[in-house]
Every structure is written in structure tokens, then in C-alpha cells.
Length: 198
Image 1 (cartoon, rainbow, N blue to C red):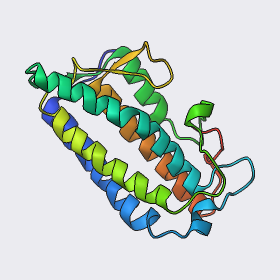
Image 2: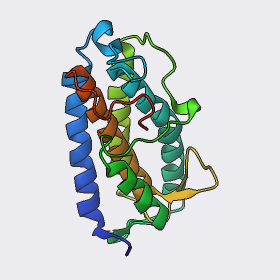
Image 3: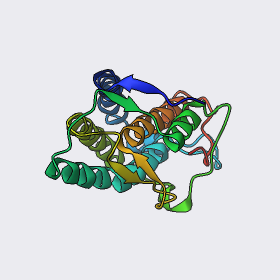
């Protein structure tokens, strides 16, 4: 499969647009929910909406500081943006895997990134909203460096380094996947809302 090459400005414009839509959902759809609504599970084997958000918060808790640190290092080195963003081999595979609907393909979540409980407080939605804001800030900073050259360690395989652009795109697609899962749970649908759907 040939590497996907996109204009840097187009890539980050799309990423920002996707994040702004997620920010609206975080603010309007999830923050107003009661603790009962957040913790309602379709079945014992399926995550609640709150657990979907908690999973995203845990993953974000790993990646966001790592990305911020590496962008800061790139800025200190005088890194400048390139005209295009080129998708790496592993980055492309990870992003495409996350784009596959959960109704078609589920993934097992490593235990350390799984939700921590069954009775989550409403603050889980507030933390999620703040993480979307932080990701928007990091996407803005990433525009200003060479997003092909900054490398981010993978959460599951730390020796595997993904390009900053790939990592940001993966995070956005991963969030979209679990937001759709949470919305399906809230709507009473169970397709793609498996406990193990990473």
C-alpha cells in the first residue's frame, strides 16, 4: 500500500475540524449526563458511556504529555514544518485499523488502558473535555514543527515510534471510535459497544 501524502495545511485543518466537532460533543453530549447515565451498561460484558470516556482519558493521559514534551524538544531544535505530511507504514496501519467500525472489528484493550471501575464520577466527562482542548492545543503546535520527523513512542509497544502526524491522527480516529461507541450505548444500541472494543 503506497504511503498517503497530504499537504501539511490540509492535514492539520482536517484534524482541527475533527477535534472541534469532538469538543462540541464533549461539551453538549457528555458533560450534562448524570452519573447514572454515564454508568449505565447495556450488559455486564459491555462498557458504559463513562467507561468509554475513561478509556480515552487513560490513553490521553499517556500520550498527551509525551507529545507535548517531544513537540517542545522539536521547537527547541528549531524544527520547521514541511509542505507535506507523509503517513508512515505502521501509522497508516494503526489509523486504518481504528477506522474500521467497531461493528465489524473489535480489539482487546490492554488491561492498563481499560476503565478503572463501574461507578465513575461525572468528572470523567470533564476530564475528557479538557483532554480534547489539550489535543487541539497540541495540534496547533504540531503545525509549527516537522510532523514527519518528531517521533512518539507507542503506548503498547514503546520501542515502536510513530510519526507525530500519524500519532495525532490515530488519537483523533481512536476518540471518534469510542465517542461513537458511547453514543450508541446512550441511545440503547449495543453494536460495537463491547467491553473489549479498543
